[in-house]
Length: 175
Ligand SMILES: CC(C)(COP(=O)(O)OP(=O)(O)OC[C@H]1O[C@@H](n2cnc3c(N)ncnc32)[C@H](O)[C@@H]1OP(=O)(O)O)[C@@H](O)C(=O)NCCC(=O)NCCS
Image (cartoon, rainbow, N blue to C red; front, top):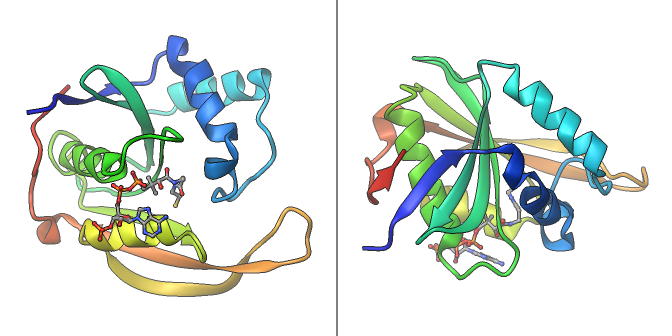
């Protein structure tokens, strides 16, 4: 079996993750689409590290870094929000493996009650990803997100997965 791991993001990983985040294939699906500079990225990392309800994980497959996933609102029995991206150019199936590993950790060690995700309309990969992982589509916030140029409004799809509805870990993961 391919070894899939999730490890807390380290300072040494920041350059890799910032390059992924600024790649057009990731950036265009985010709620903020400006290019993130090194100082801004380091400040963001410091803020996340100081918040005990946040988790930042690097996903590796066979030792190779292939994705990033983060949670906010983490507490036993809590309702958390997640966000993620696969490394641009990562093999097909990477997102699904990352999602399964992250949910195994979220509902396992972190004891969450519910994981929520928000997806901009038009992000067909992420819409399919959430549905495939068993999330329920709980609503659409109409024209909730204004584009950076102020010219367009995009619907936001709200997804939720309850611990009770989660089918369980499909992949072996190590801390
Ligand atoms: C969303 C993301 C993590 C999915 O990862 P991935 O490696 O492309 O996804 P997988 O290959 O594991 O496929 C997962 C599901 O999405 C579907 N999918 C993947 N890319 C797709 C695309 N471009 N269009 C439609 N469906 C797509 C797959 O068919 C699969 O569904 P299925 O099992 O029903 O066939 C990845 O595309 C990504 O990082 N996108 C940019 C960042 C982003 O959008 N993050 C989420 C913000 S809400």
